[in-house]
Image (cartoon, helix red, strand yellow):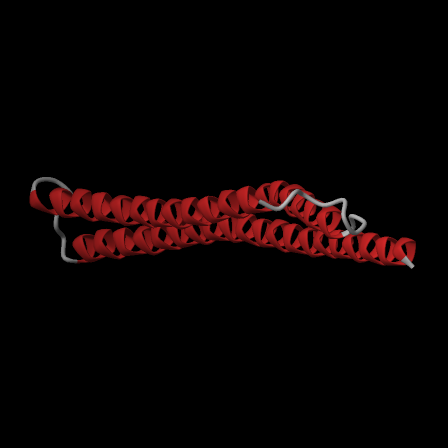
Length: 154
């Protein structure tokens, strides 16, 4: 009868360890999936920022063209103040485009930080699995000792 109890206890311990391994693998897979999503979101943030900067530059080029045409229609020479206006407009367009790229880079960096955190979590799960299995095996081995063979009580 004692052998059956020991065998049942050992099987229970092994089943618990197998369950911990499976849960750990699933958790690590989830973290790796989250990392992949965050990496993709970082790329999308950069692409959106480039598209926004291109749109700003395109609209700015149109604005500069309309300003030049307006000055020409009015017979204003492109020197002095009108030239300063065109220069200020070009500088503002460039600044707005660079700001869009910077905001996109910040968003991408935030997503990459999230990706790194998920990667860390996935690798940490492996360590926790080992500790959890070791703990289960130690607990199980303590309960699997035949009567009278356990630690000496004081």
